[in-house]
Length: 480
Image (tube, rainbow, N blue to C red; front, side):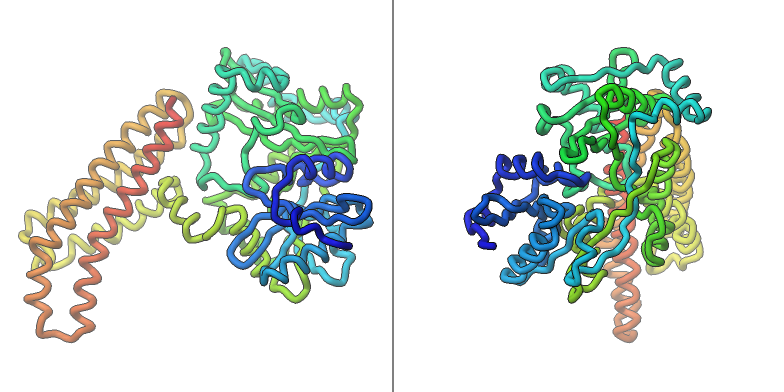
């Protein structure tokens, strides 16, 4: 099984597409053409034998699903890729495999979640027994939502593309976390000749988009992107799915999936804990519930596969870095800069003990006078109530509510930015000399504690200002 060195180092979409069309049997196969992935090919005297599309992370190579190859070659291709990575001193994991690698003694597997599967031929009959889903479809139609199928030329039309890109921006603005890549890169305008696209319209404006990619050897389709405007009527996403399944049924398609519902099903204990505690940042249960209410015929397990000599924790962290586009710390910082609602809510709760501490603290050496101390306490109490008002207005849909939330968020961002500047000025002008005079003869620990309080007082409003400006940018996108 010789490995072509030229194939290892050069991304080749034409070769990859040929293998996908010949051997693509998994929901992740088409993802090999996605942005940011590298290609590794295994060839022999018969030509290309297999493909691994992967993302490099520090010290690791993370495969986007199973190797794209014939089923009987999957293990051999995967083991050859492990050897290739080992020669470069890199770990390997196969993220979102459908389990075929588990039969090799070289690999272990961990359940990541499940993917729902439908047979479009039985969709109409299923729907006839699902009253609540029919009611959702009725609500969307009653609100004037219609569905259009768009070919590649229609998707490329400049005005329509601009509207769809605005829809995508609004969808992202409503998300807690920043954009991710790897298997969840949103690319509805890539490879349009191979996709099927459907748009939900209301009043001449797109309010939801469904983009499908083929799963060739199953003669099936993956609903890769299902994006809904945050102000779209209830039932809009369900109406898109209904329209798509009926269209595919007319084309005699027998296999469709909405892709992985992460952490769904009987995952391990620490993943169940993650699912429960991460809800403010990502609602795994909510995503699985949406897919579950569409009544799939079955749920297929999806795994993380990795060599036996590696740690499952390292393999999972490598996968998360692939989605994050690198450092998890940088991804966390990007999340902070977005000013997500969960962090603004945490800021509310932190303001309560902070305001109490300010009120109870001795005036000297922390404040130039009692009046200044009272002003800071009053400002923080006012800020607490303003943040609660922002949370209430931000949770309400509608154009007027979005505008009100944006105005309030902008006003708070300006106010807290001024607070940060004035706090730093006070720290330099007053606290620097006052703290030094009082604690100069005390222990090093006392002096360090005093300066730590000043540093926290300066960093707190600065971080809060950054979060509020991030929230303001997101709300500005949502209000248009």
